[in-house]
Image (cartoon, rainbow, N blue to C red; front, top):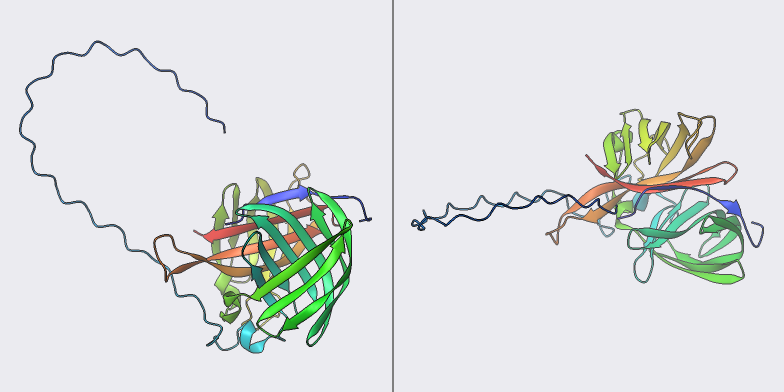
Length: 285
């Protein structure tokens, strides 16, 4: 599961607890033990709580109105698992963004736009951020199979970055605006979304307010646009600045089950001037 982070990104090459030890008290000398009495039979242990969750949506039988049935073949959420874990978004306008990392540690992010002409895609513009430094991306292109795979590469900071993405099963989920209503949280981050998409809360201690709205209003496609502003002037996510980007419901396996999954919200947003990027993966409370 991804951790929340808000970081300041600067242009770079290519243009672009520990615990506090507790004091120990000296023990009094032990007194002689009384003879042991026979133990009463152990009470039966309480049954383990039942696991809760839902089945993973199926791309072979997608829900009516979902991105898998109503999308253009390239839009939606794309993922890669392996040496690196990638969660990518493509919206109907061709905005392309992703975050890549190892386990819960994000190592890079990307924002750009692509044009598509089946089966090809071409990078129009974009930048990659690694260790808070932005690098302009170029020479991006590849192929995609509608609702199946998206492959290709681009060049940033003098290196070729390869993409091998698969269409995520969450694209088979049909949603409404109220599907994201409620309180969602992880360490140091909590947001509450109302039925109309209004957002209030904190991201890493920075107060935020804004919206989490369907990217295609009135649709059932699992792709949302998050637009937030800070509520104070002293936080990384500060007041007077708008941060926006993609978000979607993503499924995580329920621990102890091979068939049940829980919903999370993954988001990736940035300031208009690209100076600050924030991301996270929140679970329903």
